[in-house]
Image: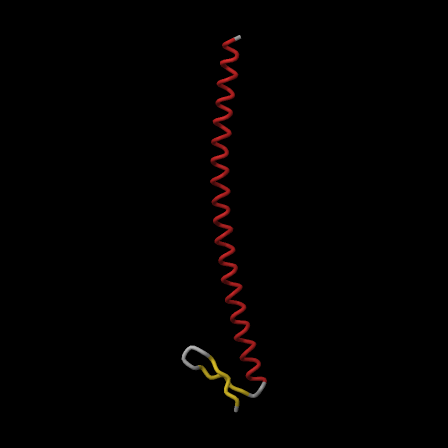
Amino acid sequence: MTDLNKSNASNTDIAAVSQIDRAAINSQQVSIKSWSQKILVVILCAASFYGGWKSYESNMVNECTANGGQMVEAQKTMMCQLS
């Protein structure tokens, strides 16, 4: 009977160690997934910001030309010069 108890105890220990190993592997996978998602979100936010900025610029150029103006490039800005 004691040999059977020892056998069950060692099987339980092996199962516990196996579960700990699986938990360590799963936590690594989650953290990698989490970092890749964070990087993806940052890239998407940067792309969205850039797209919005270019859209605003385009709208300003269209509004300038619709009012009979012409875009003039200054040093770091664009200005609308009405003729």
